[in-house]
Length: 93
Image 1 (cartoon, rainbow, N blue to C red):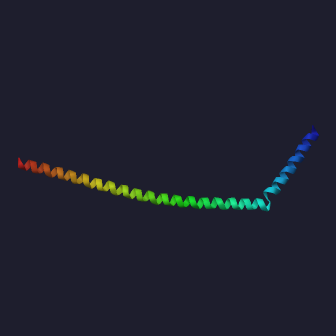
Image 2 (cartoon, one colour):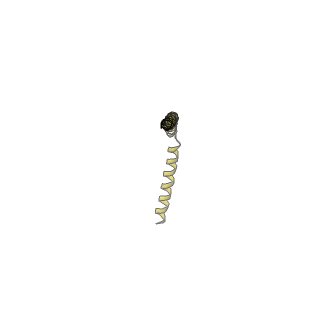
């Protein structure tokens, strides 16, 4: 049983060393570099999209405020018109 444990330890150490060398090889470095470059491109693209959405949201907000202001002016004009009609009717009676 002790030999089995020693063999497993030795195999694990060998596999770990080989894996470490594989992960630090030139080919692995190229893969890491390409992956990082792709992530950076994706980040830039995402940030452009976020900026466009923020600009559109600002435009939508400005349009919505303009609509609400126009409705408020119309409502105020309607109240003034109703008050003027009531005054005209009272003086006519």
